[in-house]
Image (cartoon, rainbow, N blue to C red; front, side, top):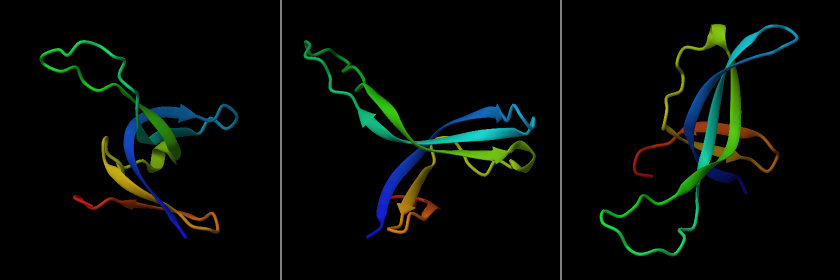
Length: 95
């Protein structure tokens, strides 16, 4: 039974291979990981809920082939098959 994980693009950064000198764009995809709020007095306006991101997958695209394929905060469905094959699909809005 395949596993489906909703991931979000949270970052881009330049990267390079120190041996070959090849340059890459690193695309970071993650899931939201809420952090429990410490007990405190209610405030107005309410403080934002603390949260962090758990990195799920990093893509390294050669810089010369980078055409802006991905955009910040886009949602994707990461599908992992029983065989270990993975598939990445742009998430449909509202699903």
